[in-house]
Image 1 (tube, rainbow, N blue to C red):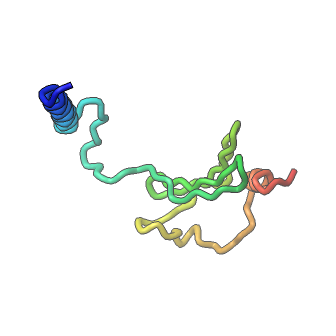
Image 2: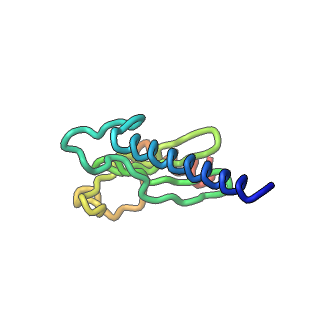
Length: 120
């Protein structure tokens, strides 16, 4: 192989990389393949706030949707809502009506929490 073959290879590589860059810029510019954002909605509505591993197969995930948080237990074959509708303000702090300081779950959340802790 001579030097001319290497130069031809490098020029072809640069051309292909430039072509990929131009196509990526065009798709971003014109929004191909992306769902357009709703008008007046610049901030995201759904986010994962925190994740905590319980054991090798299960983890707790705190999910925020709008101004509500939901605590979900994820396992290999199931998902369980431990607590739902935790109110938070814009900065992510508990809303005054939900900041009771009570550590005991109420109602339907009690069996799910016992299952999450490994109880029966």
